[in-house]
Length: 290
Image (cartoon, rainbow, N blue to C red; front, top):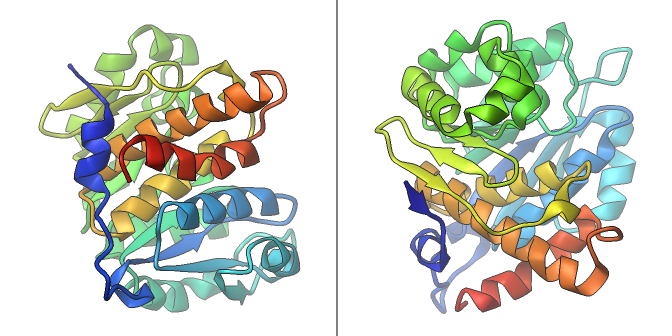
C-alpha cells in the first residue's frame, strides 16, 4: 500500500502558465446545500476556490442564496426552485444536467439533504453526467438503498464517505467498517468501478484497479462537522482543473490533512475550525513547493 506525500500533490496540481485565465483553469458545478445547511455549500465552495479553481458555479435552493452569496463573493450562483421544506426540487434537473455539461467537474451532496427530489437528482447525475463527479455526504445517503446505480456512471466518480456513510452503503456497521478499512474501501472501489475515499484517521484512497493509498497527515482537531465539506471542495476542484480522479482525491486528502496540521499549530486541536483549515490551504500548497 502506498502513502500519500508531496509527490502526489505535484502530480495533481499544475503550475499556472502566464497566459492562464478562468476559462483554462477549470469550472466546477457545486450542487450543495438546503434550508438549514447553507454552511456545507459555503465551506465546500470556499475550499474549491482556495485550490486554484478558475470558476465556481453554485447551484442551491433559492432560500439560502442570500446567505451563500454574502459568504462567497467569487462564485456564480444559480438560485433554484425548492421543495416546501427547502430542498432542491427535481424540476431543476434539465437545467442542472445542461449546466454540468458546460463544466469540468461536478460536486454534489454537501448539505443536500435526503428526500425523493434529491434522490432523483443524484441518481440522474450518476446515470447521465458526462464529466467527473464527486459524491459526498447526502449524495451518498441518497444512493444508500441502491449503490448499484454507480455501475451506470458514464464518467469517473469519486465518493468520500465517513465510516457511517460507508456502513450504509455496504450494509455493515460503522465498527466493522473501521475494523477493516483497507479491505472495505478496496472491495467497494473494485465492485462499483469508482474511486473510494474512506475518511477517518488514516484516510484510505482506493481505485478500481487495486491501487490503494493511505494518508498520514491530519489530526483529531479535524473531527468536527464541516471538515468533510472542505475535503469534498478541494478534491472536486483539483479534478475540475484536470487531475485524474485518483490523483485529485489523493492530493486533496494529503493537502486537507496538511492544512489541518498547520491550523492545529495555530489554534490547537480543541479550538480549530473547518474555516481555519480553508485559511491554511495556501500554506499547505507552499509547503508542497507551489
